[in-house]
Amino acid sequence: MMDQFVFAAEVVLNGLMTGVMYALVALGFVLIFKASGVFNYAQGVLALFAAMTLVSIQNGQVPFAHLINAALGTQIHHFGWTVPAALAIALTALVMVGLAFLIEKLVLQHLVGQEPIILFMATIGLAYFLEGLGDVMWGADIKTLDVGLPQGISDGIEAATAQWFGYGFFIDRLDLWATLIAVVLVAALVAFAQYTKQGRAMRAVADDHQAALSVGISLRFIWVMVWSIAGFVALVAGIMWGTKSGVQFSLSLIALKALPVLMLGGFTSIPGAIVGGLIIGVGEKLFEFTIGPMVGGATETWFAYVLALIFLVFRPQGLFGERIIERV
Image 1 (cartoon, rainbow, N blue to C red):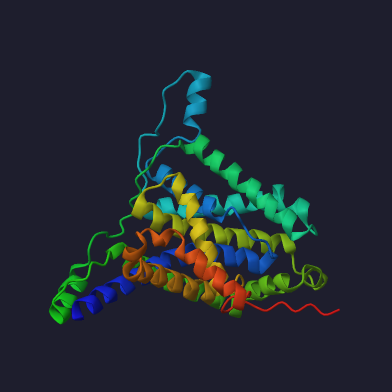
Image 2 (image 1 turned 135 degrees about the horizontal axis):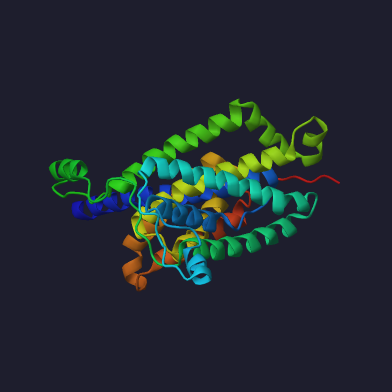
């Protein structure tokens, strides 16, 4: 009995760490939905694009090398230098800001006043365009990302739990760093949204575009700002997931894992994204641990969606979402 309790405690801890990783992706969705009411289907691809750009800048890779070599008959793939991780992250963040500006200029500016479904379809097209652009710019091969974050089992936690319970927990140090970074990121985003002039403007735009425009708030500036922040959040998520599993196409699919998180936490709540992520992370790990062996395992692929469906039935706006009431 005691052994089962200790194993369950380890499962819960790992579930919390996994939930934080889900929440990092969900944050990008929440930010854009709060400011524009648009579900950004491209958020997962933004994480992939950011991670690919970061790796390539670090390695000094020439963008569009395949196209250049095919056109000029050269064999140039690298500049011949490497870039320190901190500088590469800063340069990638600038690339994401530039990308946000282009998205606003070339896509969103022409869709002001359109129905949300039109904007949603635009983000689907944007997702596939960015995915193709990333492959053409940096190549489709699997890349290894290393920005100096520690990985592997935490010896301190293993030793402490071995002393307390007679069994050492396996907790990845990368997950611990992801948790710390997520906490700092959420605190910064909440403070930004609640206490800064730009944050209040963002909330005003979310409430009513026309009313915000009438008091002098620039819709274009808010959208560029929000997409830039969402791009930075995607960069952080891309670093964590890319370090964990490599930078490859499947990275874009982590957005699918963020959907149940959003359904639980609410599409408009930053803290809700974190709480939803933790519930999904712990829930799917515990379900796999307790029920998985009875039903053949692999329950982590569907458990989160079933849990989210149950929440939708009883609380459609999520735990922290704002209930929409339309009066006629």
